[in-house]
Amino acid sequence: MSNSSSITEFLLLAFTDTRELQLLHFWLFLGIYLAALLGNGLIITAIACDHHLHTPMYFFLLNLSLLDLGSISTTVPKAMANLIWDTRAISYTGCAAQIFFFFFLMSAEYFLLTVMAYDRYVAICQPLHYGTLLGSRACVHMAPAAWGTGFLYAVLHTANTFSIPLCQGNGLDQFFCEVPQILKLSCSDSDYLREAGLLMVSVCLAFGCFVFIVLSYVQIFRAVLRIPSEQGRHKAFSTCLPHLAVVSLFVSTGTFAYLKPPSISSRSLDMVVAVLYSVVPPAVNPLIYSMRNQELKDAVWNMMTGWFLEAIYCPCSSAYHSQHHS
Image 1: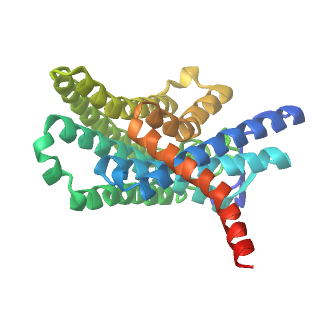
Image 2: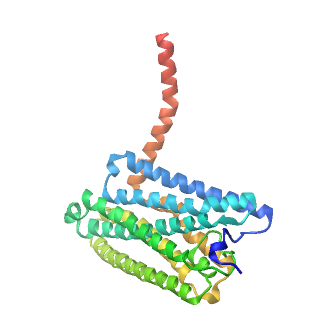
Image 3: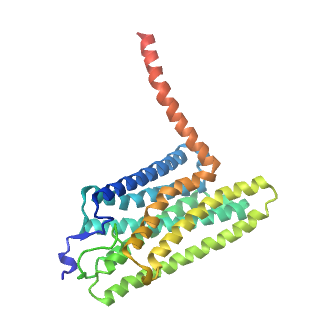
């Protein structure tokens, strides 16, 4: 028996004990991580460099990509390191940092998705007021508000979780540090219920945001179906459906992870669900947003072809000029 003051490290759940499968999982995680870095990095660069994309919708999308990069970088690199070195250990400080950053970035992402639903609602249902309701000043306030709210929630949950005495060992049934897994090590029911109650308050707030998103999209689809031209409906759907797909993936996997009945809980299922809500969304979000958004696809394509042409012609041009002057 040990308390939290004597715990210097936690032991994460191993994916497998077979070395060949560990290496297979490492390469799989590496591929997903590189895909997330490439996809989100391209979106961030394209939006930042193309002045045609300097609109509220793409400003929020840039913030979403930054949050996705941060959230996947919080969990996957440590999991890959443990797989390649065949270890399960994470330090007490590292675990606290992982919980803080993961909670911060995931909470901020959810609040940002709520803001993005409002952005689409105003753009389609109240287009004449779009410049007033979502001008540059409003965007500068809304995005930092999402980040700031996520930060406050992360501070609250991390401080509360790690103030709980732990005396049930140091093994966590997950491949990264997660609040419910820390709570299982709690010494007393009162401490457990305190953080569990805080989590339920967060769930209620998240449910309120979800209801807001659903009501926004009910109004959006009603307005889109009244658009007379097929081209107008297609353009409206092309900006709304990717966001709705991202919200659905984020909410469904996260809700199942935290609210699934204990009767169907198992180590393998918990790990699969954790991968679905923490690893998959940041990797597939760029693909979802770029599939139907022609403006974004054009910006990324122009940026990549520009880099390619510059790489080809610049060295040749400089060589030509040096030879000519000589």
